[in-house]
Length: 446
Image (tube, rainbow, N blue to C red; front, side):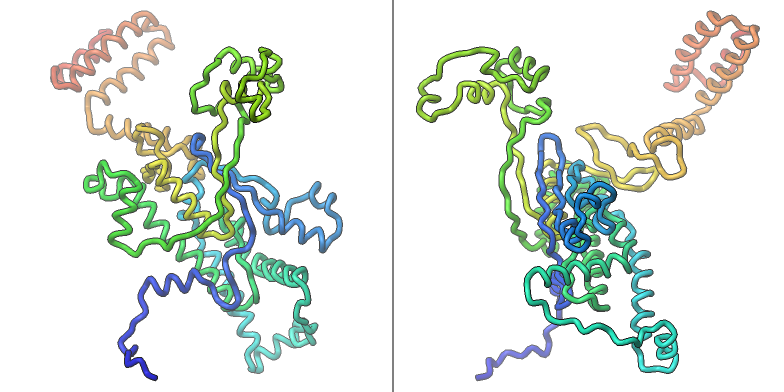
């Protein structure tokens, strides 16, 4: 029986299109490896243990595990079996600033050429015959086991990495969260590239909306990152909810990241000097009622009191969108602030309440970092706008040169420098006319 509902005027929304892009197609899905991410909010770090599955596949193909592990990394996933540690916020910024389009364009040009060779034309046929493309291809049988299917997935990814290596290697997250490729088709490439660019566009907006201090600075002043995200959700299509497996880990590594108050500082310092030493060897005592009841060693209780254990959240992430959302969520928790460097134009994370316009990176082709270059440029602009600074700098160079040749004594120069700074500051504050300052500084030594 007909429902009576007409779909003639239905139009697909931008959100519907985005959901479709993120969902993949029959040739590709976007969850593959099981990478475990440990979040340390005290250190503000993410530590990603990259799944070694790709190395296991190479072992099966080559059969020489020890030689491969010793001599080289996996050619397409060099971080397999490694732990990648980075400050929270750093990699999501890297992902948003990576230029994928050129590499994607090169890959699609090659794929278009391959597609053109399949056409039933004399030109395509001649090229196929010349390069042996028309030779009979081996018949691919359906996999009969999970192991055979896994091998197909791996080989399909190798095809993607071979033809789109520029995309795969251009960003850490894209590299360590590969897609699951059911069929290495032309449509698979397009779907995968659209997926990356859609996520990049989404998080570029989220970085600005939630964390950028220059984004509508006056209108959003005093609003936390989490509250800014709440505003985003109320005015724009919100991010779909994601579910990730979470567990807790405990670690006392380093002894220097203890946020809980340490009660026995003497024993704590002793442990820092000699981590292998137990509290049981520092002070011996009989088990108390609690320890007798639960059969807990006295040293374990004393260690828990002296050296508290921080809880580290651990998550399992299998896709690019999962790791991006996880890092984004932790940025909200920490109320992280970012802004664009006025020298290189890239985002950087602000630390504490310290406000600066420049990052600490060294721009390509430069010897100094952006902070040093920014300070130099700022001072040069200040000198340009204020004649008192120009007069002072010119006189400083002139009198310093006289010290070198001996016409001005070092002590006399030091005395002049002190007095000149005082006079310069008076001129800068408006207490002294520029002309008077210039006459004083030029006639000081006659």
